[in-house]
Length: 499
View 1 (tube, rainbow, N blue to C red):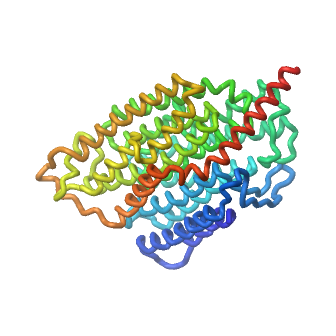
View 2 (cartoon, helix red, strand yellow):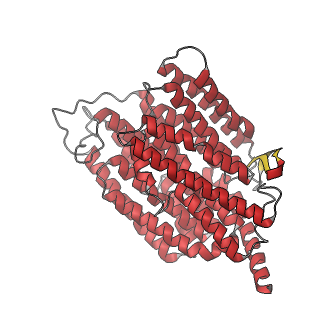
View 3 (cartoon, rainbow, N blue to C red):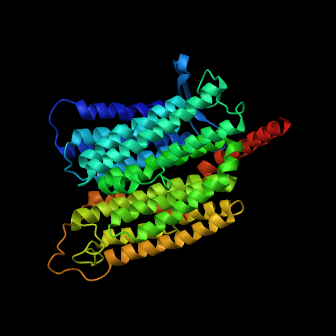
């Protein structure tokens, strides 16, 4: 089934891109939606067959590939990667609907969307370090093209900046992986066989730092974040859903999967610094969001802040904090997707994203009342209001991190209050106030535009009321993960003391 989830979207992209005949944009959209639904159905089947009592790898597939360099076709999932695979499949459908019906060059757009789905899924299920890098970089060109072709006025600058930053990210990750393998004399880069125990602590710190910078660019963390505001703002809302909703999660996934688990002793040394960087990212993102006039740029900066929570939790390295970090990845992906989808609707109907121009959209007759109501719900979820999934994830992050890093955690809690501040500013200026009687005649919001927002809202509400439906997939794996890390760390320090 993992190979199906990986290769079916690639096959679908080839069908959409090269099928003979002339098709209207709406027809291609329907075909791509059908393919995306099939992918999502496969993911649901995978969830139903997943053994919740087994914290290890499941659905493993292995095939030797380029043996001389240690590259194999090795796939598997566990409780860390499977929820992210499901999120990727869901957001692919949302992104297809968020672009609208009359997209230019629809063949290319929909084919690239499916390629992105395949690249992200491949990175999440890859069990070979070199295979991970291949899929980690596979989505680079599709995203570059989607920003450069369907972006805003400054799309050339934003797409080039994105390309450079993310290319450097991939090169750094590859360099660290090659260093792990070559310095150990490894003949395979399979995740289950690769180890860092034979390396000196200084070597581990160097390799871990390279990984941290590489994955930190993808997340992104301050001060490696400068590509994000431009890329998120200039990309279409549909592309931004994929950028912020799932692509950024490859960075946090990589930090936990490869950084923490392969370098537990070095991680414990750099963890206080990582907690500080995460806290700075949280505060910087919140304060920068407050200063914005463009609602899309405001949401983009909010993403920097919320991704900082994950780094603080990962730095703490406790069972509860790692559980919270993974839950925050899913929560953030859902909420950010909803926010960008709704911002896209507002921009299409009203024609602006400027807070100084927007007002009164809650007007039940001439405004966008349903969109405004959903936007309020999304803002509340992002601010961590109880009863929504954002609160559940952040509460676990704070509870799990406080014992290890009390001051950074308290500062993150304060920053969560700042989140409420900038969303109150956004909602007060956008949804409330008096409409301009001469200009406020907006096109109606179509059901096809509203349905994705309803789906995301229902999931956010359901997981907020019943967070265990999410946590039960994650907890067995993260518990085993932290136990394994602690055992390796104890062995490593014992060897160091003996020397």
